[in-house]
Length: 536
Image (cartoon, rainbow, N blue to C red; front, side, top):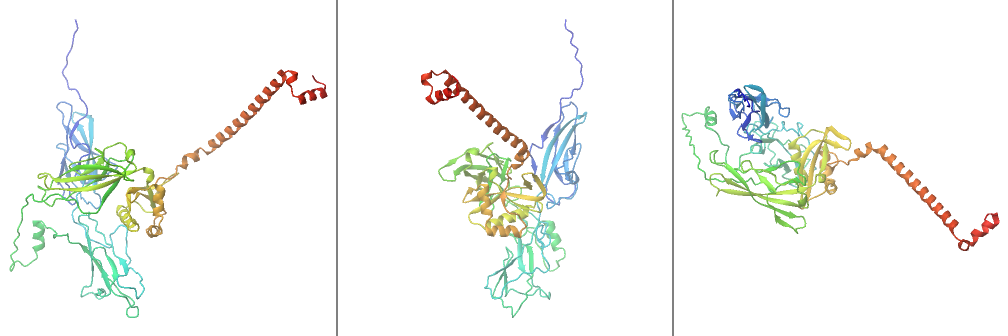
C-alpha cells in the first residue's frame, strides 16, 4: 500500500507576465509641454501567484536617468502620468524600465522597457544667438571689392529654430523700421533671399560714394505653405482678448472634418540610406507620410509594394522577396536577411505604400534606395568637438554641394578611433561615399574627400584630413613584435641545420658509393691519389 498525502497551500508559479507594453513598444502620443498629471500609458502585468497583485514601479536606467523625474507610475493601477516639465528640445526620447513585483512574494519580479518619444509643438522662435554651432559677432564684418557685378555673393545669414522640421522653417527679411537710426533701407544696394538668408549685391558698389553699409537682417517664422498657422479656440480667445469688440463681431466658424484627404509623402528629393553586408542594426530607416485630416481620420498603414536589386553594371535587375520588412503602423523599415553579401555590388529600390486606414483608395508611394556596403568602405573626418547631429547634417549638405553625382551617407558618430584605442577629446564622423549610384571603397572615398574645395571647407569647420573610418589593425602586430622576431630567428636556424644535414647525408652517400665500386669503375684520378699516398 502506498500512502499519498495531499496538502493545500500557495505555490509561486514564477515571475509576473507582461500584457502591455509589448516588446519594443513606443508611445508617440505625448507632446512636449503637456501638463502635470497628463495620462501617458497604462502598464499591465499579471502575477502567477494565486491571489497576488502586481505592484508597479520604475527601475533606474543609466541610459535615460531623467525618466523617473518627469514621469510617475501608480503602483496599483500601472497608470503612467506626467510629473515634470517635458521639453523635446532638451530630451526627445525617454526609455523607462518598468518593474512589476508580486505582492505576495517580492522576490518575483519582471521588467519591461517602455520608450516614450515626445511630439514637438511650435514653442521655439528663430534666433541668431541660440544656434549650437554658430555664433555671430556684433557686428559681423565681411569685405567685398568695389565694382563687383550685381549678384555677387556677400554673406549667408543662418538663424536656427530648435523645433522639429515641421515647425522650424525660418524666413529672412531686411529689417529697417522707420524709428531705427542705424538699420537703414539698403534694398537698393543688396538683395536678401528670404529662404536661404543669402545676401548678394544688387548693384556694383562704389567705395568712394559709400565705404560702409550696415545691413540688418531679421529672422522670423516662415509661413506654412498654402495655409496659415492654426490656432485653437483658447488661443483665439487670448489673441482677441485685448481687441475692441464693441465695434467688431468676431464670429468663430469651426469646420468639422470628414475623411477626404489621403496620406502623402513629403517631397524631399531622392530618399536613400544604406545597409551593411553584415547588418549592425535592425532598423534601416523610418518613412513618414502625412495626412492633413484630423486625428480621427488620419491613421496611416504602411506596406512594401516591391523590392528590386540592381547590380552596378546593370546586368542584374531582380525582385527580392522579404529582403526588408516594414512595421505597418510606424513605417519602420528593418532588415529581412542576416547577410547581404550576395548583394554587395549593387543597391535595392524599395517601393513603400502609405494608405488611409479607413479608405485604402487614398494612398501614396515612395521609392527608397538602399545601398549595400561593407563596414570597411566607410571614410571619416575628425573634429575636436562633441557629437552634434545638426552640424553633421549641415556638413553632409555642404559636401554634396561641392561635388557632382556624389552622395555622402552618415553611418556613425563616435569617439575618435586609432590603432591603439579611442580618443575621447575628438569625434569621428563616419560616412559612405556614393558616386554615380555606386558605393566607393574607403580608398576611393578618401580620394574624393581630398578634393581641394572639400579640404578647404573641412578646414573652415575645424575638421581633420579624411581617412578610412576603420584604422589599420597594426596594434595587434605591435604587441607580438618580439615574439615575431624570435620566430624568424628560429626559422633561419632550422633552415641552416637542414642545409648542414643535407650536406652531411650527401657526403656520407658519396663516400659509401666510392668505397663499394670495383677498381675498374673507380675514376683514374682517385687511383693515382691512392698510389701517391701509399694507401690502398
